[in-house]
Image 1: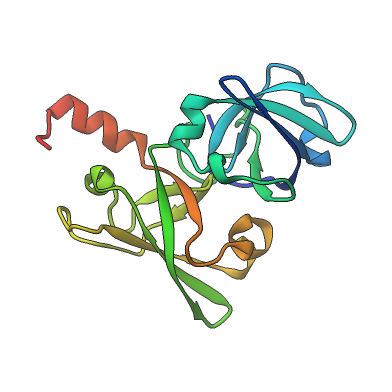
Image 2: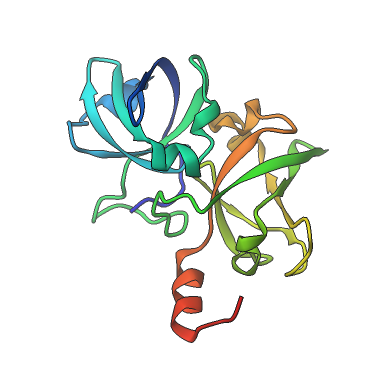
Length: 202
C-alpha cells in the first residue's frame, strides 16, 4: 500500500520495448538504497515490481495491461517520474490509501496561477465521475491530492480541479507538466468498495 506522498523524482534512463510490454530503467539513488529484486515501487502512481537494480538505477517491467491502462505508453527517455516506496507497518500515514492501481487516464486542460500556487483542471473518464467528490482525495500520477471542485455527475465532459502549493510543484513532476499532458488517476478505493456493496446503479 502507498499513501501518495512522493519520496523522490526519478529519471527514465532507458526504455526497451519487449514482447508483451516494456522494460524501464530509472535513475533514482534514494529509492535504490535498500531496494531489492521483487520489491514494489510506485512510478507515477503505478505499482510495479523491481526486476533489477544497480548503484543508482533500478529496472521494472511494464506489461501491456499496465501500458493500456496508464500514460506509460507515451513515456520517453529523460522523462521525470514520481516515485514512492510502499508504506512500512511502522510508517507515518500522511496521504490517503493508494493501491497503485490506475483507474483511468486524465488530461490537464488548464493551469491557472494563484499567487505561488497553481490551480489545475483535469478532464477524466466519465465512468469515474461518481467516485470524484469535492474535498475528497484522489491520486494524480501517484500524488495524494484534494479535489477542490468537480463537475456534476453525468456531465458529458467531466472534470475536477486541484490546487498545488509550491512545495508540491517543486518535488513532483507537476512542475514540469503542461496543458495537454496525460496523468494517471486512482480514485478512492473506499468509494469503489462501497458502490459494489450497495449496488449503486450506473
